Image (cartoon, rainbow over all chains, first blue to last red; front, side, top):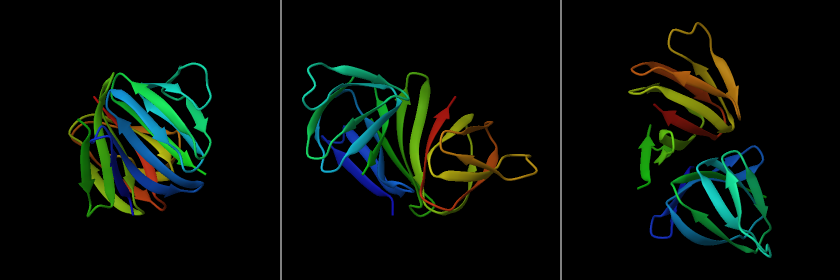
Length: 93
Length: 93
C-alpha cells in the first residue's frame, strides 16, 4: 500500500512505501519553516529545490541542494527552511 | 499547492509541484504493469526500485534502476512493469 501523509496544514505532503532497504517516504514541502521530530534514523536526500537545515546540536544552518543528503538520528528534532517547493526522499532505518 | 494524484485504482500515486525548471511529480508505483500516455515531454528518473519500460516505437523492454532516467515525447504512450514498490521523479517540459 502507498500511504498518503500530510503535515503542517497540508504544507508538507508525502507518500510512504517500502523499498529494498526499508521504509521510505517521498515528499514535497511548500515554502516555510518546519520543525520535524524523528522516531527512526532518517537519511534525507533533496530531489528538487533546496533545504536550509539546522541539525540537532549543530551550531549553524546548512543548505542542501538537489542530490545532496543529510542524516538525523532517531528521537531528535531538526529545523528546515524552504524558499521554493522542494522535493525530498526520506529513508528510514 | 501540492497536488495529490491517484491512478490505476490507487496503484500509482503522485504529488505534483513546480520546480525551478517546470512542473514535476514525485510518485510511487505498486507492483504491476501500466500504460501511461503523455501530454507533455517527460523525463522519468527512478528514485528507488526499478522499472522495466517499453518506450514508444522501441523494439525491446529496457530496465532502469535507481538514478537512471528515460525520456518520452509528448502525445505518446509507453508501458512500465514494476515488481516492487518503485519511486520516481517525473519532470515535464
